[in-house]
Amino acid sequence: MVRSKIVFFLEQSFQSYPTIPNPWKGYPILRYFRGTIPTYIRINTLRVKPKTLLNLMGKRGITAKPVSAELPFVAEIEHGDNVGYLPEHLAGYFYIQDLASVLAVLALAPSPSDKVLDGCAAPGGKTTLISQLMKNSGTVVANEIDKKRIVSLSSNVSRMGSTNVIITNEDLTQLPSPSWKECFDKILIDAPCTGDGLLPIRREKLLLLSAKKVAEHSNRQKQLLKTAIEMLKPGGVLVYSTCSFTIEQNEAVVKWFLENNTNVELLPVDIPFESFEGFVISDDDLSHRISSNVARLFPFPHRTIGFFISKFQKK
Ligand SMILES: C[S@@+](CC[C@H](N)C(=O)[O-])C[C@H]1O[C@@H](n2cnc3c(N)ncnc32)[C@H](O)[C@@H]1O
Image 1 (cartoon, protein in one colour):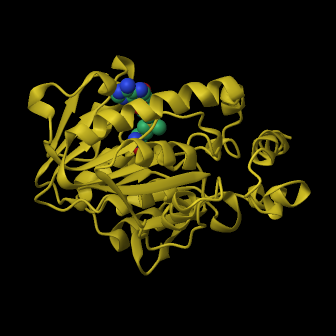
Image 2 (tube, helix red, strand yellow):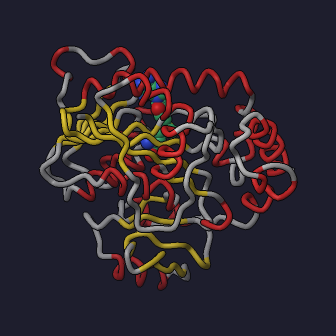
């Protein structure tokens, strides 16, 4: 029921893009929303080795297997529920995190010497993974506008043992003050969005899906990117991601960003997992380039929440 509502909403929107191919219009689109999405955990290698954690969980009757040889620290729960109540979870040995969310951070590829900004950070799934990949070196500024969500952000940062993180409580669109200008090597904008990519597992998100909400988010996402690029050092890398299926919050935002910022170059999203290209939203060179450089993930065949990842470099 919920799935057919998302599909109906998207199908209506896709109809207005003549360049989108037929499998995404009408009944065939349904197949991309079928199938179950497993619970994934991201193992916190700052605290434990993947094998050790999987053995500990096995002793509690929970079986989980790594997603692939390239992603040994991401595992899919095969058997067992409520892993959030395990002492290993409370001790920060793992974070319950969809594989798609992990892939966005891998696209950013933070390294231990970087100064990284996670612009929209709560509750901290990506912040703490950035910190993990940086081996707790360098600096991560985790910014979040919502005071209430700062609580979950700081509790996750401390649970996961991320000691290289500074938390700030700012409206990113109101920055940068002079001290934040051209300050960061890498920036992640995991943007506020309608969250419809989560609809297959969280029905309440349906309330957020309307043309009006999509347009509001799209405007805010553009503002966030506009500020973020000012804070990035020349040569620095920016990743923009959403958990929405809609074009207006994804390819269309990327197109606006590239058309309005001549100092930004689109980079291919290089991730160690199969994904789809983006949609071609009009028949011009830029739209084709965007399509072949961004990544989209769907419940089928990827077995993840709906997700969009794009990557840029400041000239
Ligand atoms: C998709 S969620 C981020 C999820 C997070 N990256 C993670 O992986 O756990 C988007 C977040 O952006 C925050 N946000 C919205 N507008 C913002 C703004 N103008 N400045 C900073 N944060 C903002 C929201 O409150 C929300 O917590």
